[in-house]
Length: 256
Ligand SMILES: O=C(O)CCC(=O)C(=O)O
Image (cartoon, rainbow, N blue to C red; front, side, top):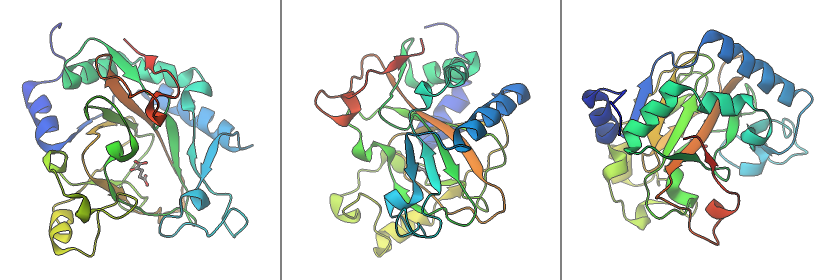
């Protein structure tokens, strides 16, 4: 592998905490272009879309016909919407960071997981409880990274992420999760774990890299402005999706 882009401290931080924020990786012009593309996919709304009502998370509208029922939660299949998402993933500093974190020269983006723009609207957005992204993914090894692009301020007020540092290294028994694989908040040992969580504050152009096993959660958007965050799942060429699973439905997209 070529010279490292990240410092040894940054790589250690990622493996110790399960996440790493790199500031200002996406320049202003590209952020604006992304926002323009996203708004153009929202009005008029371009399928495929996941609605808040579809997930049934706390605070979500009861159904698509209820008040707020047409509030989008994700613009799905981002890579098929516009080449701008390929350009974002092609940013050399994003790729170099991923190569260092996954210790590889060969990166692929799953088309089956994330590959979306998370949209969080005032009024009708829901809460996402504590979970690991790997919960519904099937790969040879649980060694994937979610890459989250921030196009504006993200914090507790507008439903930004909270993460439990180091939780990717814990092997929790299944009994600590509910039937949708969220952390059960009625258990004292889980409450103690959640108390260790940290708010992930992001600014326009920042990129958050997080391990597929790190527990994270997010509240609804309590501000007046919607929040948009493109997010992708990255794996290495020697960590294949298991055949016959959802993870293998569409071929991954190579970025290097
Ligand atoms: O923004 C959110 O509500 C959380 C999204 C999330 O954690 C996920 O989709 O895995």
